[in-house]
Length: 406
Image (tube, rainbow, N blue to C red):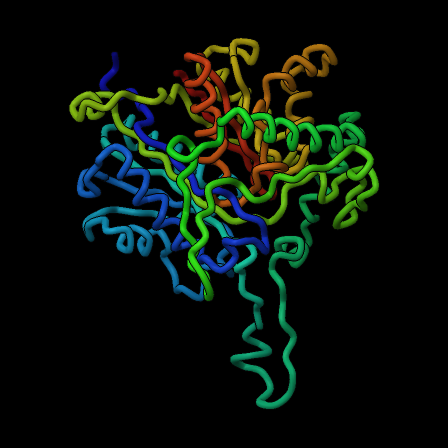
């Protein structure tokens, strides 16, 4: 075995919360602290042994009121030594998978032996902004306009389309209808419900419970995802599209969510020295970028790139995770991977997001890349081994991918 082979030693996330749910008042920085503490506790790893931490978060208006360098803040607040090196990453929804890739490269190169990749977001906690021209340099008297940066995620200010608009248009280009997307959204909810009923999303595996103090009464212990809901194709078909999209609705897209995730990576040599059994091997990782309009295609492009690098093909993958930024993204990327073959497209759908995806689970953007990675890994473990690929897109045409072997 290659001593520089990169393995996953521990992986955990919080339950994902609804926009206005139980977690709405917990800053993303506090969520990051929670998963950092838990991911090392599970393997009795001394924080002093961690060489580097990469932290993904991409709603700066949320953590702005806690000043800057959130990665540095979470490491110190979680009890990591001041000598620990950290980096905050904003690559939109790709951020925590980008964190994983940077850690993977650091270990492969010999620059580090133990790295944590993590990410967190509380989208509902984002501040409303007053621009300096109205506030700091503005009128002394009178009302000032406030801006909600969650609206279109700010892309429209510089002339970019809302990502929901682009995703819907590209879906139609690829012959994927509104009904196709609604069916996928419904399936995501149904698959999550079945997985939860079968005990797959349980505390102690992928999820750690969090305790939420209340102004009155006992604290609430949250031990499951909040966003999943019961619905029907009829209900979904009655929803209106958002942001001018021809097909994307609140039912075939995730909400604006809350949550955090963290993964400990080690060189195989270091894991053996610590008598840790690797949960999975990271066989390869790649990143891509492309035309912003075609964001929905980027997970497929990232998967093609990493599989080409490994001299593998999509048919060899036992499982696939593609983040459901919208149902359109997953369906478009699978159609590209199927090379337009309708039968192969359906085969790939059957092994993609088998326990539901972000439409059901939620999409706290900075945390999602690491979340889909560990969801893939834990399902491979349950099946007794195998290999799989996970991929995610990010706003304005970005993508990341990872191939795991268990």
